[in-house]
Image (cartoon, rainbow over the protein chains, first blue to last red):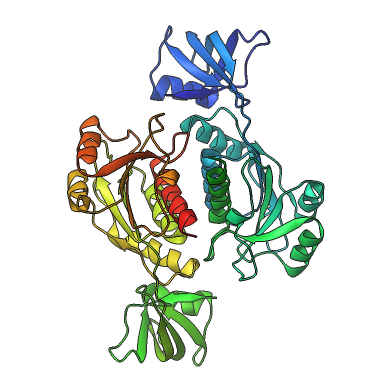
Length: 235
Length: 235
């Protein structure tokens, strides 16, 4: 199944405009022509069965045949993850987390983070491509990068906040700390880990330190492993 | 902890030679000097505490202070995974599978595989780098690419053979099909999946089709997800 993505849907949900990348994919890669049918999602849970009406060089116009809302009652995983020096490793995390399943991603600037800016447009494109690839109808929310303290403060009123740190014999494994059907927030540190003052603040503010695995994981691997554990527990 | 890798260990296990990449890492990145102590693994479970005796431009000579065998009684995961058109996606799989934990990887040439050759030297370097990064003392075995039928035949006498295919309501999830402490073989197909005749052959030859997740996964993601599920079950 080839899934397309569009947010350009008219109010009556009868017409959809595909533009830019999606249009190129439709014409150049899949070589679709007028009259053919395709499936589109808006990334908000709606799935549209459409017929191609007009193909132009820059956009394609589609008539909606029918649509439905694919309701999701799955619990929500929100990840705060330290920015990484190497963009390709962070982008890989965005792709895989989206593919395996995540609700919200917040890039974090912590004391030992090596980068502060993220190309939001490029990042969103990677995530859109991943929902199409994995046939998902919900596009995870990608927030602008924020400071560690801000993330901690904003999550402080939530239940089930976890801070992933390196293996320590006193620490419980994340997989043994969460239960099915619970919304979870998890915070993943940079290569150098969190600073002592950051860990202390998190502990004071309703975050439980956990370990993701017995051996050391790179930041982006830790992010993906946490998605996988969450998905495993909720499958 | 900075872990180094070397297979150049003398018979009496009293001297180790670091060469090439490892030597560069020692001198240029970590700026170690003579007299300092470092930890080395041979990727076969041995860990050596060493002292630097001589640093030359192309190699470093170390005296072994003591060594131990880190015995592993963990069950073994063997993955047969289709070759991928894009080298970076396959390399990413090699890195992450090594980081999360795998015993043996066999690149598979199946009917719909898009590539037949693998740069073995480069692939091994990626895996060595991953065991160092994640502080593991066993380097997974990377086999030369083989045909689908060969993999199936060679595994036919083993227990617990699985074939990962796309979600189908009749299929059990992989996570519900395996038990703790069992050695497992899993076969992951290319983007286009396995052909009908391949699936039929696998079923006849002691392989059980399973699904890894509810949604579609890319080949390299499926490989990593199978490592994570195996690790989860055995943690």
